[in-house]
Length: 552
Image 1: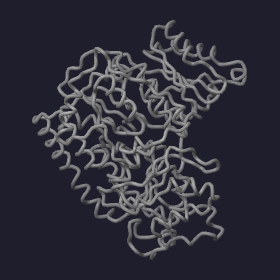
Image 2 (image 1 turned 90 degrees about the vertical axis):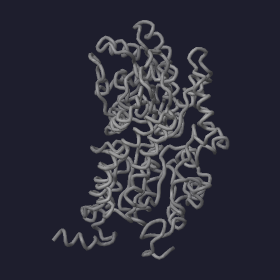
Image 3 (image 1 turned 30 degrees about the vertical axis):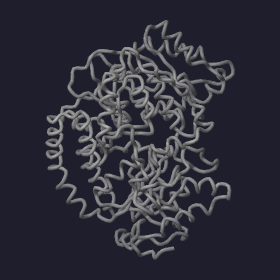
Image 4 (image 1 turned 135 degrees about the horizontal axis):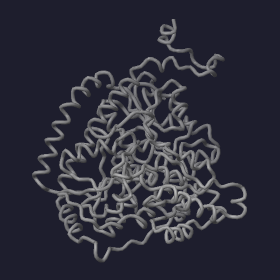
């Protein structure tokens, strides 16, 4: 173990990363140690990341932060579409716990539209439906919902019991679609499919592509037309990105799926370019739209000042219009005049502080940029539901073995649309690539993390507690399930799944919000007063000196 007072890659206190890894693993049985050991790495060579175990089943008995396939399908990708009526076919608990648990905020776009996100609709399956089947119950629920609201479209989500008893939700949807004359489609996203919510993302992408993309060929009158994929408008992030792109003169047809309407998704194949925010949740859609319509895509990141600048410049370079390139620089300069004085002030208090991030399928990567802006160290990070390419980069895709869990998810065969495939777009892509422009890329999280820091996939509660005991980071960015465990151990938790009541954190104004919030959280002495009831038995170290002073 290193000197506890030394300053190394893991921060000012605690052991080196390799020692910390062994400490976390030693409590497990040997078989579990071997499995978890593959999912916990020291990032020894960031330029050539080591192979990490990812997208593998959580060991039974370990408390994970993951969600299920249904959560990934309805809760992440489809659920934010505000004018589709969403019906959960299953027990009421599934529908209840997916009801606005993420802050996918939205606005009504047109006269007469309804925001259905405020409703939680379920077939409320009971024991007799499990015994005798729930298809009649589902058809009746669709009819009742249609009679009450007359929506443009209805989507149906199957949960675990539905898959187990074999209800054919797709036939019910087709029958009711023919009867009612509106678009009705289902998702076989039973919670047990796949190892995490990642399977639900893939199922959702397939459904959106089959049932919505390309239904509306209305032309879009704008000079630069793009879609933002994988941005879910948590806390208003999508609106801040909209604001910046609008200042630049770039039109967004659809943001999948934050604050987006059914009609916008049906029309988004008219875009010139797709840019991808959350790689893990929607790379499938980007690839299928390129195959069918010829629309190229590349990865962007609007979290953090440097990420936002880089993304804006890359979009402008794609279109190659000097007027747009100049306009983007003007917008960046104007926005930075507001950001820089605030960041300069906050950095005087945050420099050298430490953070850890265990969240989502891109957020643990993207948010490192915001901490870097504040001159803070990210000592450890990992995803909940990522695949190897999210850590190591897309160049490892050919080497990822397809396992039984992956085969459980339908792979669509997509071919070029005979009439709507725009051949000029692949030609433009080829020309740009010859000049060094990159498409269909994602370098992954590990290449951007510091050398000799910890990378932990699907972190457990035990590992999180050991991490806090050893390093006591100044802040941890995490999810809802582990937020209060972290805070009870005296460390502030920035909840990055739904932001609690904060946000937006994207773009320039969002970055200012984040800097101020982290400055407040890491500067507050209240966390040194936190003392869980089990500490009162004398088994824990005494509270810090500041506690005594403050209490007095």
